[in-house]
Image (cartoon, rainbow, N blue to C red):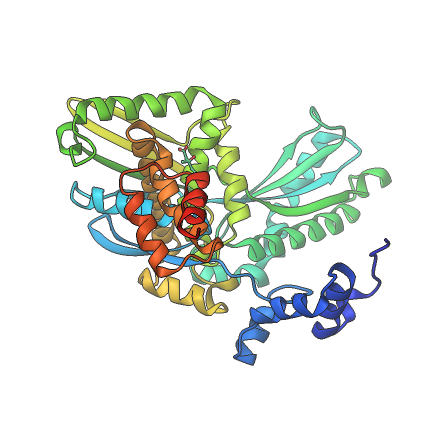
Length: 438
Ligand code: MEV
C-alpha cells in the first residue's frame, strides 16, 4: 500500500485526522474518537497546544506529579515532575524525605557559560586568516549589537570570540568559537541569532579584505549553531552525613550499606555497561523536572552524556566516598536551562510548575534539577543494594496491570492483601485476577 501524502501540512486539522483514520485504521470512527477524546474542551487552550508544533492532531498526556520535601540549601521545595515511569516520583519523594532529616541537599552552580560555533571553510593562508580575524573581531562583535542589546542589559551577552584552526582534523575547516552568558534564558535563539549574524559579517568582511586573494575572499559558511555540549555550565549537588545516621528501617547496618553504595558507584565509574544504566537513573529525575519546567530535555540528555564521556570512556556522573566516618554522595552535571522565554510563559502547566518552585532563576532551577537527579540515583542505588529494584517497581507496576485488566475495587483489595507477603510478577498478578474471576 502506498501511504504517501502530498500537502499534508496544508490540510485542516479535521482533514488530517480523517486522512490518518481512513489510511491506517480498519475502524476509522473508533480512531477519530480516540484522537478527539484527548482534545481539550477549552477551544483557546487547545489552539495554544495545537500551535506548539506542526500537524497537531491531538494531545499526548503524561502524568505530572509532585515530589515534596526537597530540602535544598536550607529551603524546602515541592518538585514538579513529568514522567511516565511508575516508580520515579515515589522514589524521588522517598529520597527527599530521607535526606531532609540528614541536613538536606547542598547545591552550587559552578559556572554558566554556553557555547556556539560558526563552522566555515577557508582555502588559503592560515596566518592571513588569523590577521584578518584580529583586524575584524571588533567589527564582528559590533555587528551583533542589535541582537545582544537586551541581553547585555540583563548582564549577559557574548563573552568571548576566537578563531579556531581545525585543519589538522578536516581540510580547510575553521571555526568562530564563541562563548555566551544567557542569564535566565536557555539562550538557544539568542545564541543562534548571534552566530548567524557573525557568519554573515565574517563573509562580508572577507570579501572586502584587500590582503586576501580572490579565492581567500570566498569563505564558505557551512553552518552556525549553538553547542549542546556545555562543560562550563555546571551545577554540583551533594548530600552527606555520618555513616551511622544512614540507619533506618530497611538499612539495619549503615556501615555495610554505605560501603555497598560506594562500591556500586565505583562499578559505575569503571564499567560503561553499568554507567549507562546508573546515569539513566539520574536522568529519570533530571528529565522529569526539565520537562515539567518546559525545558529541552534532548539538549540536556545530549550534553550530559557527552560530559559523562569526557575522559574518553563513558562513566558515572555521580561519585561517593566514606571519609572519617562521613558518607558523601555528589555529582556535577552540565545543564543549560531557562526560566524565561521558550515554553515558560506559554504553556500553562509550565508556568504552574515554575510557580510551585517559587519562580526560580535559571541557576536555582539548575540546582533543583541536579538535586532531583542525585536523589533519584540515591533511591535507585539504595534499592539495588538492599531489597533489589523489583520490589518497588513491581508494586507500582501492579497498578498498571490492574488497570489493564480493569480490576474492580473488590478485586484490588484482595490482590493488595495477597501481595503484602508475596512477590509481585506480571504472571502472578494475571493468574490471581483470573482465579478471582473464575
Ligand atoms: C530504572 O528506570 C532506573 C534504574 O535502572 C537505575 C539504576 O539501575 O541505577 C533503576
